Amino acid sequence: MKHIFAIVMACSALLITSSGSAYERHWNIEMAPPTWDIELFEAEAMDLGRLDDEVNGLLQAIPPILWRPAQAINTEWAALKNIDDPRVQLAAIRRSDVRASVCDELVDFRALSAGKNLPIRWRDNHRGRSWVDPMTASTLLHALESFREELPGYILTLGDMAQPGCGQLEYGTLVRHVTDDHSKQAATDLLNSARMIRGKPATQKFTRSGAKRTLVENTLIGHSFDAQGHLTLRVASRKYTRQRIGPNGIARNQLKRWLQNHGSITDAETRRVVTTSEQGRSTRLWRQHWIAEDGASQAIIFSTRRLDIGALVDPRGETFSDTFKQIREMRFSRWDAKKPLSYKSERRWIHRPGTRTSRWETWALVHEAGHQTHISGRDVDISYVTTSNNKHFNASWKAIDSRRTWKWFQILARAAQDVGGRVERILVGPRIHRILRRRLPKKIKKSPMFRTLLRRVDGHDAHHHLRISPSDHQPLATIPWLWRLDEPLQNLFDAGLSLLRP
Image 1 (tube, rainbow, N blue to C red):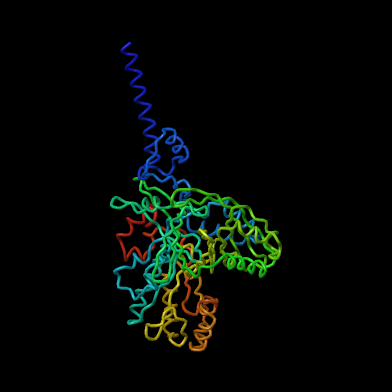
Image 2: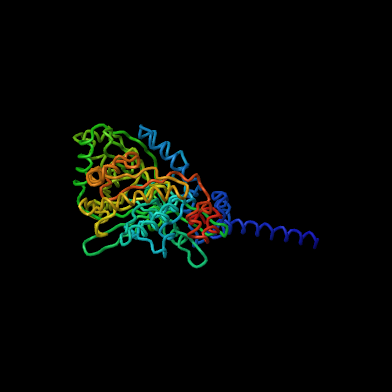
């Protein structure tokens, strides 16, 4: 009998340990491997009848990061952008893995060039769009050192490159990676402060400076774990400034004007989404994405009931006011089929219920460029060479030093060839192209480089856009210039060509 009792006790202890282990494995963010079934372990934990206040189950709503080659991500985005029908296009994006795809082949050129005394300035210190592929990094390092030697005293300003992890560059959006390590839990702290906002895991922070109010929204768009269990979050940030506060009539008239100005409307996507308040109460709303058939504008409407476009298309109809009462938020922006997840010039109208009467707040998205091309690390925005190293990115044609700008283009082409690549194209503005044709000698204008390398593209009067040919995922150690200049980088990039991947 004593032996039977001992066996029963031992089995009970084993079961308790096993269940407790499953609970800890799921809920301890630092130890949870990325391959485990989150829902399975959550079910096990809930069966135990206890919760951990330090745990945030929101991680389930954040897709795991898929590490893919930069060129594969670029190719898939290009195919999705070529779909003409907005409804089909948005559905295809939702079915694909492209939004969770991240490349680990890029290098941070800002970090790579630090301390090398190169003749450069940076256009900004906050965007984080400073990542390039190894071939482009090698070309730039080689070219900039040659530029310093051949044109002493002159400098260039570097602008947008790729964002961390490649992928779509959306209007108004900055992407960064937030990571836990042994000294701080930055990613975990951000996760624990997030909640579901209009169907997306995000945080919102409001600040006030006098009468000016600002909203910063951080959306968590991807997660991964390293071998030690440290969490990394991919975060998309948008900033808004409050424009005005007004009664229901103003918001109702805004919707009327939008419907009247754009005629026929396509309901491109309709689905239910969850919003969780700061107090933890969750509500469901309908999210309807409407696109004007003229292709110029889009609206995203959040409402307590699914809306009938037919009841809204005729704003003079008796049902319009009743239907409008169901709306809780409206977002109006420009539509661009080539940037389907971007919301250029977005204005948000947010319903704020009050004790006596409800009000609407309007928020304007702070401008941030959305580049269709800067997604694979092969593209760089660079200033022109100017006569006094001033007015970079200024579109001042009088300040451009045409002869030295052309010299810089030649240095770039030679540097790319020296490291085994080539300059695919240099985009310049139409006005700049005319200035170069007028100021440069006839021999240069007739050269194959001038006729084939330079391309006239609107929007490039303040800077030129450099594109380097694909590097075919060459290991960094095989690129001669970067290898000669930075020998210690071999160990860093032999492990996976990554400053991003945990």
